[in-house]
Image 1: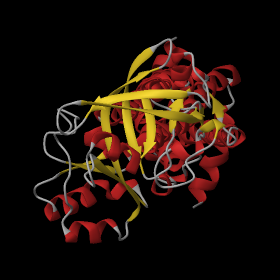
Image 2: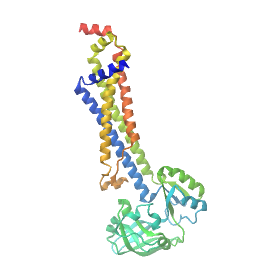
Image 3: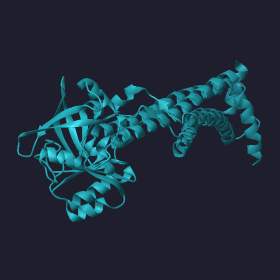
Image 4: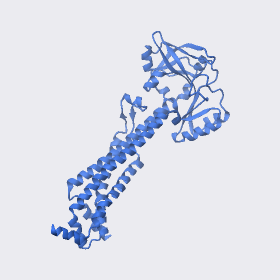
Length: 407
């Protein structure tokens, strides 16, 4: 204890013997830690936004289809009847929302233009809380009745077709008998969403779509949403076991691009941490080695006066601890403050939708990640400091002093 009382203040004074060099080293550590905190918060916000967008944009946490539907999304591959056990599970936790849909390719025609689209027949009330549709209408209104005759289309598609709310659209698609079915629907609403959905999707009520395609009560898919995405894989396995004749897939199998992007963001964060720590390590080792070379005479004198090598080693490690601890703590504090100041969101611009994320992302502080960054930098920094410290403590006092005298 008496040794620590001597070494701690001595190490503190020695840290500031060369304030310029110490300041530059601490600045490098501060910038590295700050960048780790900000990068981590932003990448988690990015990943979370991509996942939320994927789930909201009709995918849900999982979907059920007839075999072959995903390879050929036509009326030929449809679900006729659901097993009782499957229906019961879909109505229980952790599934919080579930909706049946018709989804087939179709063609839209107006007086001037035509466009290929993906036609959805939806259950209006069931889609609330499951997908974006109910909250996306910017002109007109959402469906008010389960079997209302009307159509919703995206703003960009409406512009392409040179049409607007209140006009009529002709919808053409293949019926179950192989013939082309067509019917006109009034445009009751224009919605705003990602660029892809605005250009390529339109929505009818489920009964209207089934009537158009002569499907009776058959459907194309069932989408469901959970109370938390961590259970997606387990729930998909459970549902698949209850419906062996149907195909049940979780969101990551349905949207492999989003899954790959999430993995890429995690990998990018790891690479950034390694690069940042590499820069810090070189700077820290350089600073300590310079200090050792400049203070060789001092170390020899201290050992000649009775300071044990392990005490000298402890003093140098304490100097590193002061530098790393102060810079790391300041970097963590500033990083957390900056992340909290962006809690209202960061606007990435309209181009973000092309990358599958929301226009606004919301960085959040993760206490576990902050603690991990701080602890890792401190521990790895001290490990980096071991070589210069051991080199200094291993000097033989008499040889050092004799060399200094000859110099």
